[in-house]
Image 1 (tube, one colour):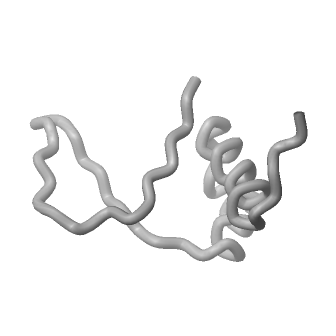
Image 2 (cartoon, helix red, strand yellow):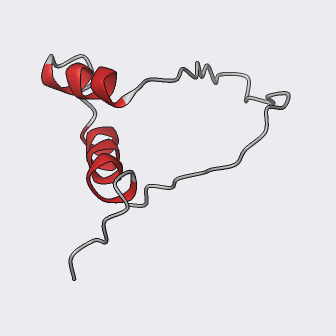
Length: 65
């Protein structure tokens, strides 16, 4: 499993597949934590990626080796 972080992107025209429906929204840290806590966000891979980002990348801390 890979979780990727993209930064410095610019908006463009989407070219989704016929059966693809993706809605993007921005959430702050507090909102994401609350969504996880209340069970609104339940996908384990998404939760793992968000919590990893908040714990290690957003704070500038290095992942322990």
